Image (cartoon, rainbow, N blue to C red; front, side, top):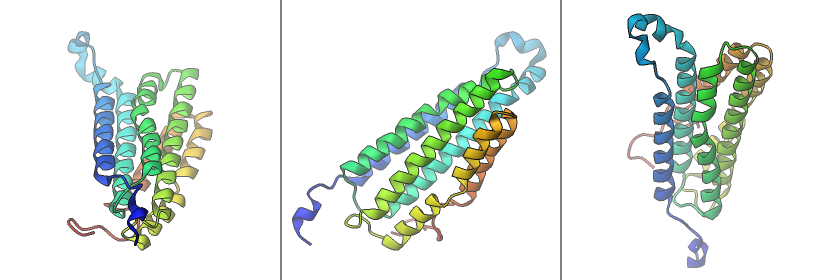
Length: 214
């Protein structure tokens, strides 16, 4: 193949390293949002139990970001290089992933607080839906960039698995349900993360990628 075909290539390791760093910071921030006032020392156990919305929000967001990391790793494992467009799509994914702590905080603070609960749950669902759509676009473009794919069969399998993931249905359903029963909508967001996680041991395609094997 002509050397010119590689002129627009960018290093894949920088993309992956930057992604790992942003996701690590995001999951750290969401746990830092959990806190109990020092004034609760005399009734600490009830105070801990009272913060169950924060734990639910943390669990849902941590699992979702964990699945994003799994799927992103699966996609990049099929590539040998990246290009400028893939970098830009990755920035959109990270833009949304880094934003996750904000709706997580809103959800933890406003669950069981009337009308604000609906707004927080719907806003959270829209954010997660946008993140899933961005990652799917990233995966589809990666699979279509044949000059840079080192395992086309696996790349196509991963892109197809993401495109047909039940997450979109669950997020749309969760957003709709959140207008009526916000807690049930949040439960659907959690189910979406669990379903995607179960489908993503180390790759979202069909076969597990063994350490050291390309």
